[in-house]
Length: 115
Image (cartoon, rainbow, N blue to C red; front, side):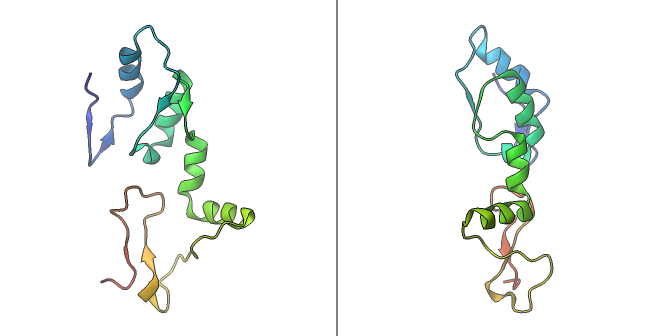
């Protein structure tokens, strides 16, 4: 069974539950393990979790870790070292990177110095 989607647009979130149901047939999987790409789709993760056991983070956890400020706050509260955040251009951008908030895959990461 092929699930429509591609690397640019991602997974077809509207059809994935139907596809998983067809694949499972009369069996109930022990758990669904989600791979790369779902971190951009917390609503789809929640929809899958409504129909199947999910091994891994649910949609609420994904949304929380994809928010840079919430993640930094959680890390600070737990004593976990984490990078400093800025929402504006640093005065000396040489040792900084720019990332898209909530981005996935690393293709959005670039040097703040523009090199």
